[in-house]
Image (tube, rainbow, N blue to C red; front, side, top):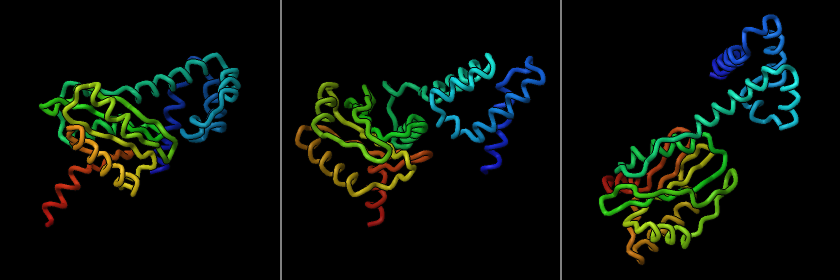
Length: 210
């Protein structure tokens, strides 16, 4: 799998450098691959290193512009407001949304009486492995949106979707708080790199096993 990625990476680097450079194209391609032998190396380039590469040839400016465009495309997501979703549909949307994120984040989707999403927002952003949550901020946002229910979505950049003890404890606190103020906690999702965990789905499965 790794070799396939590197082969595809090499092809893309070659394609991104214009043919009009003639023999210089091969020289630039080889030089760049020595500097950045894999996609992660590009991600780790400092601003100074990028400027140095740009000095190799004017065309390298277009090369990095294409990379930035790709990042922008990756971060662009379909609008989810105004549609009703099952946990499967919303889970897939959120996997797509958080796919390129390296920090833990928490977003809240607010729903109306028909369980349609009327608003959603990222409320908390943490580090690579931790995100501090404040229930009062969640409830304040939900009430401002006149929400009937909420779905909490929390990403794990590591890809591990198993709920931690902190996740489970916070879900219970959130559920109790929702009951007190008359909100419906529809679901609590943990999103990984290519899949998700749904607290609601897990609860239903446990009920069926009894």
